[in-house]
Image (tube, rainbow, N blue to C red; front, side, top):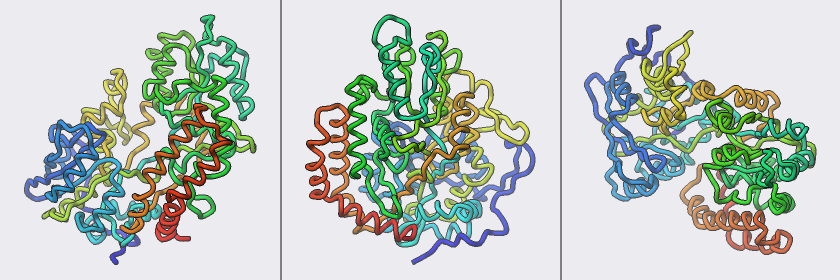
Length: 518
């Protein structure tokens, strides 16, 4: 087996950057002559690589490499497009997109993708140094055969979501931010019963969420877990053992209490149907009281031209996680160690050195700026050596991240996110919440995921999809009250055992021990 060498750092780097502004920077081109590389990159069910993106044009200017799209521009299912591509056997030079990590591992071991270990060692000094500084990430992206087959999208920072409450409602009712599960119950009942929006109607929705499955995170209040990461229903590692939180005994009592709160009208009755527009709808209608959501995006609702312009006095504040029944405060959702996104090199690529240098460029200072902020002079300017978005980007009323997607930045190729990009459009209330969660260390470690052999993957694929669907359906029934937790828990456990959960956990444990050590 090949093992990636991450202990030595190349003395020389392939890119030389002067101290001049980016538009005038002298960056050594990767290819002496103009080089076209084909790319299939269909992501988020709507985007493909676009040669007319400002970022794409700047990439060509800096590297002398042009990426040429081969993915369908009219297709609306990214996974379907990927499957069709792989089934055709006619692969472009580069394959990229979101949620493809397991596919990169599997296809790499099958021979469809090139192993990158030697290429990284010899031609990717930036990425090589990055892996040396982040050995956990190196382990997380290494296949069972010891090879690395893709460059990943790596988040920056630690915290992501947190608890939010309407401070103006608390003030009106003479209440303080809840510090534990009992106080939270009291606050939610007050929001339900004491007319904090002052319209004389009992139309307040005490707790809601824009993501339906976030309701399961409420089980943390009763000492259970809902996931090992910010991925819904993810596995988790407990004392070296891979488990699934929905199958643990502690989950039974916790989800029972969530169902109790739902029945009492403390949780949005449309929690499973309202979905992405929930914040906009309920805050605009002066009906939503508490939620658990992203610091950056949720803070924007405090912008004077946003909800306060329609709801006088509106004020959201981020608060510490209420302590659970055991007196512990913790936050389950955090940024992943590494996203399952990135790009890889196909077996038919005739320019592997140039391609891996292109991948490495995105881990260089210049490439990282380009992938995070766009093009200097268009989306940002340099101030005190740091990229700062223009006023036009920050104040035009459109989400900054959406603006960047539209010009080819912040897309799921292999790059290292820079949290400074997000911090610039996060309002003070979001930054205060972020800083609180970091300072107090509320976030629990994230499950890094495992990379399986073909035999292990066959077991996982045989059982897990149906198990996950069953777990999700049962949990939803328990919240809605359409099934009784106590009466169905025994049959639930028997179903999990009978339909392969022990087998799934066994192969995941084997992969985890191999990848990260016992």
